[in-house]
Image 1 (cartoon, helix red, strand yellow):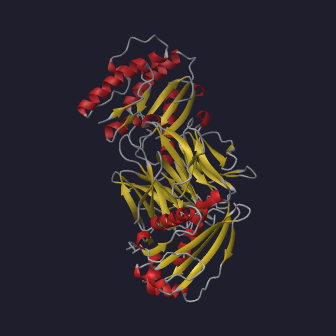
Image 2 (spheres, rainbow over the protein chains, first blue to last red):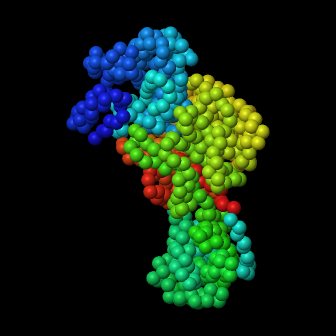
Image 3 (spheres, rainbow over the protein chains, first blue to last red):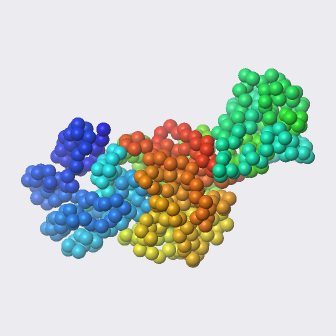
Length: 168
Length: 437
């Protein structure tokens, strides 16, 4: 049985993922949406808020194994992030790079940094000033999904855009 | 700690040859046989040290446990002993020990000096040659009794195998607690047998990859303190911490040079990690690699002339060796899969590594030219080998799939005698100290 934890930063997401955990347990397999917007949650958050960014824009993108290439689905998310960040220019952001557990510790620290750097690079090409963007790598130290199959590891290979500075 | 050694009188002649006769080929017991290393352990009787208190039995138990865990000795159950040792200065009745197949016998005595120090003496006997192999005495504070036991075990190990022991040593590691998504990590230190465990940091910040100084009571490690992942030094005796260098990005994967004067580590800049050293005296930093790749996990050869590291410059992680100045960088691993976390053996002849292949994570060793690869253990996830001070045993950590946590294991260089190193909570990133001074 899989366990999903710490997927969300706000109560709406927590409620949502609690529901996902239940369906996940029942079905064994599930495919998590890439961002909250895909879940049809749009509309409740006040524009320009953290919740708006997380729910309506999508705060995270995902990567292939050992890769820091921005996939097409990730590019779509980052395009929305850039548009939003350009609309609300007072926000500093930190991009957190993460790796799944199927690698060694030191390499994963560097891989997470590589993913964060690729994300920053993409956002800057979409007009987000580089000096607004900090990056940090957590390597494999902070998975969001805990399980033992590939669909789960794929949720951990991610870059998360956090409004307002450093911190997990 | 000050330790005073006195040889009680050691008849050296014929000792090794006599053991050869009685123990089977004694050299084969300890020689590293890469093809078939499942040696028959040497039966040894370890009697309780004569003492006024329970410490005599406790020291004997620690000596016995050390030797047993090495896989090279089979301590005999005390219930089988015939002779009760009452005077450790006199020769034992060798026949009584031969009857129970004890090929070696350890006797000893504890006493308190007038100044409160503990005096510990032991003698090692060859029961088939009817003679003493060695004898030593030590003076120390009573609270150091476990160290005395480890030193005695090292002495016995060295006398009977011809190799330096490794029992009087410690392991620094990362103690883990809490759920995997919010795992708390603390630096911790313990004796190599798991005793005397204590935490070195609180659980506020993620800490990773501690490594011992070869020459001081000091470790280097990586911490996420202040949201800035960086390499630090920690003085074990004072608890004083210090940032290593002033680098413009994440520094990680630190390790000391063999003389203890430099820290070698990776510096992350954008998507690339390159290897740098910092001289701890002059604070001078030197860049050793310059690639658009991930170069990390550097480890010096024991003579300090070469460095092994991992790099994905060729696509996947592989092992490379370069001169200590960064010259002549060349790939040495060519097997299937990817290779990482190389560590140069203290003997200089082997490199231990983590290998990923076919969805499995293995611990292995290879010669420094990349030949002679041997996998010692394989499974879902084994990672991060560290060498015992004598280069005979490796510790590493093993992570199960799913929500559980890692634990530390030890395994012989031969691939046999794998043992859990028991810790009160999850444990990862072990690093073995040198033999204590």
